[in-house]
Length: 324
Length: 115
Image (tube, rainbow over all chains, first blue to last red; front, side, top):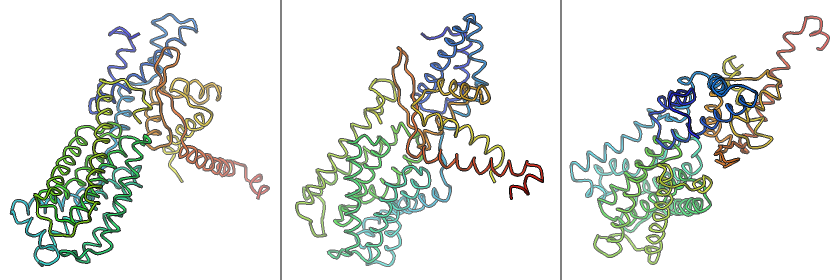
């Protein structure tokens, strides 16, 4: 039963709440609910030890310590953002180059001449470097995500090395295919992990992996300038989103990633339908299998994140173990 | 050698992990068990337990689950495998610390005798 507003417990919780304003509302509710339950248990115990109700409550609140100090420590534990400045600069560099090239409207022509033009090569190299650097950002900010990020980063590096050996027209370095294979494997395993309830954070990484896999594949097929630019940005956006927003509730940023992924799916559909030029060789049925897989993984992750978002904002009341 | 403040902070986490090794517990239960088993020696301001618990969860040393018990919704904390490893490492560290600290505090004659 909630305590009256002027009661010692209510005052304590209110003072704690004031320190938690920078956290997500759902996170604040959970923290305060936990503290309220603790106070309730303490008051009951004190009353059982023959204290008068008000004295029991006062004693319970006294035992909790300074509410401002408690609130600040809780806030600091949840605001776990440690963005490394060097990593941020490394991640920003290719993004800046992409923005500059796009402004100059010659990005598409540079990508078409990838490897064959001395002036285009450095910028294209930077574009290819974007996913790797973005994933480094993830590694540096969230150590618990290291193994999927390492896998994706390693695959991105392999892809980069393959590109560095010179992908021109119909000639593809075997290393690029190996990178693509690992990326797809990572995507499949992480998406299965969603089915096994590995949690929304890893599910978001599965989305990142699927976008990365699509990125490799589309690069090989030259899906077009808009898709290429978006693919260069998507892993960076995903990495920044994963690094900067609270670990349990990834909402607006991941919605942006989902929207980006759907835009890529639509572009890819146009590509398969023949509305964009495809100078590279086709991989046959793989074109359609990968598209179907990307749609399915995006739909699954959309569902998972949607449920998480609704749960986080109190619109659903599912058991916690289903959300993990 | 860790600074005294680091050791103090780490000891609270170690004590909590040691309790969770037995069974999953919720916050108030942890406070009661800590005081009961140490006969009142280990106490803390109860509100400050929760930043510790949330840090343990963030570090992957503990997992949490909300449960409805006796008509009340409580958050239970359980030790993970990483938490058990961390606990064992901390216990070993403490044993070493206590051994050498005792050695340093022992009167000169006893030290030579032990050597």
